[in-house]
Length: 175
Image 1: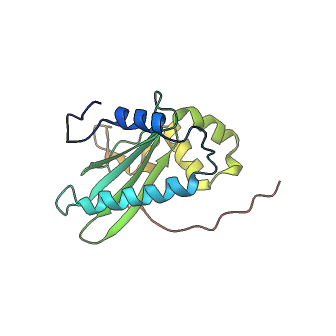
Image 2: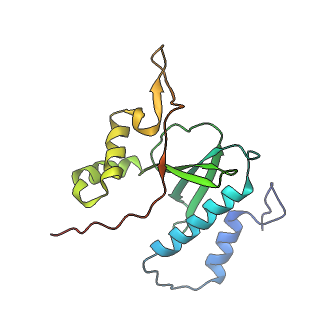
């Protein structure tokens, strides 16, 4: 057993190994979307409640990936910054103001290896999602809340407003 250097707990590797050795051998996993989304909302709310920047508005960058060594593990990192993060693939970004209890959606980008497939089948995906991918691939950072300074460098646009969180009706796709 290996203990974490950052607290009085086992390392992730130890926890994972014990779960593999002592857990169910054949677990059938169905659609995990509901569980992954509900845990994402919990993690997002926990990050907002943690108030890491003492009531200052901040950005939350969510990076989810499969672990190469732990194949049945989904790794989720919640990174907070006061300044607008640079748009990177495989991230979802929110802006939140703890004082005003307001959270806005900034962008969601898939892994770069998925982008061409999405663009080849863009009629199957949300229009805003496809527009964001095209903007990222064409280095059009205005879409992500950046503008150019007098020297031609990309800087965060202070006048940019992110999107309000809203539930959209799913569009019907007829084949």
